[in-house]
Image 1 (cartoon, one colour):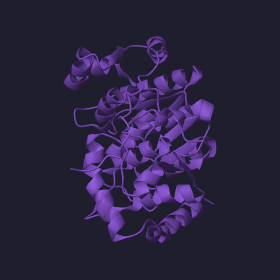
Image 2 (cartoon, one colour):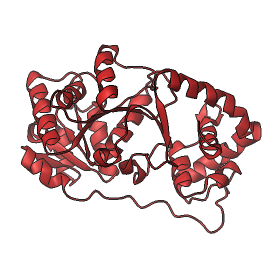
Image 3 (cartoon, rainbow, N blue to C red):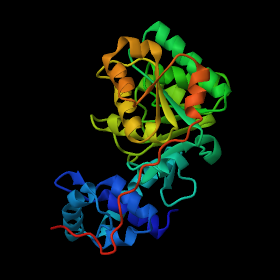
Image 4 (cartoon, helix red, strand yellow):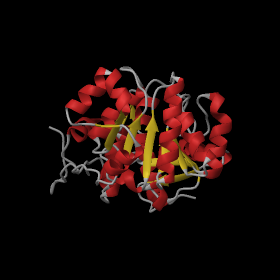
Length: 316
């Protein structure tokens, strides 16, 4: 069962006007600061571009329907999650992953299958790369996942075919913890070929979804998934990735979030985008695990939150 505060948080995430939803990360930030009541009343106590853009939409949505009118839909989603053996954690809960709390683009809730481990998950490292990976790329993914796991890190990835699946499978093979951040609702598995892998991760690690349980994969879900895969981790190790790869996007997002970005030297030598990130000081080229461990031992940068206003922010 969820309490009234959690229900209101979920109801705010249900608000939509003309197929547009209220900014979920803004909801999460305000909830963390104890300002959920302000949002429910149609005020946003944050001075940011997201707040200015969201305020008219928030007020229109609240005028169209009360929060309580969204409770039925939320109950249906919670029932779907329960049927799939999934649980809910919100930013209001102590079990919410620690690394996500200091990200500006954090999700307000997660549905998950498996078990959250606050201490272990705080030492997560994402190992990501192309779906169409080469044999040598698979070998490198296995080595990175194995050696980082041996060093005590939890291996995080996105359950995609290629590098992601190899990283998860390697962690499981060596008895290490792994986190799968998926780009669908928690009731679904994409790609379907990784169903058995997903079941094993749910038994021995955890699967995380930032979406409603009924959500099918879409063009927007996987880029959003990359934000959480990055933010839940101390850093992202990119094995192979083309200029159009989701792993390239994750490297960019990780740098913006203040996370460590580690690019294999072979990737930097072959991909202009990777060289550009290194030249800009946004990523570190790495050739071995020792170097990765040295980079990962440095603190991540915590993004400064948007300022709170003494007077509740209003639109012009």
